[in-house]
Length: 161
Image (cartoon, rainbow, N blue to C red; front, side, top):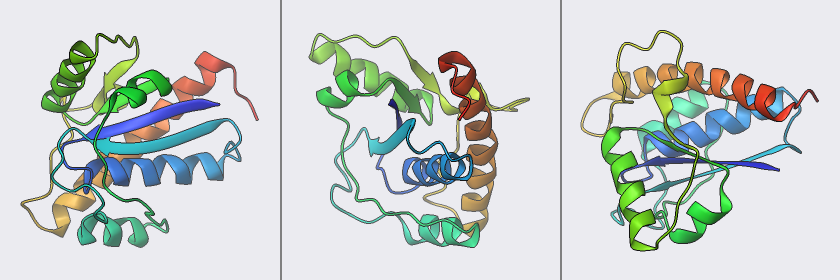
């Protein structure tokens, strides 16, 4: 089982949406037996909370559900996940800080948009302080990035069905 963790700041906007998109695409490819995903935040702001209602609405508008409660990144995540995908540079920096504090290492930490073909920016913007259009923009970025991420994971791990 290949395990992928999506990380943002509060785990209520970008990362739960990324998790939902990843799971939706994996299910459509009938690869649920090969991949597992989860999401978390680097902060403790929203532990136990449902995702932002705009993330839920955006996901539902694209035919997918988000079933997640906010949680914070921890040292077992570093140990247990094969890939850790951060939404922005600050998140990535905080992942490395946590690893350093636990004397851990991890070889496969990426920014989400590293997988987006022709990305015009390195980071997935945080839509929290904006309107619903920002969530739609984030959905499009994540959807495109995750499609390529899955393609690369399938090639790397020789997953064909």
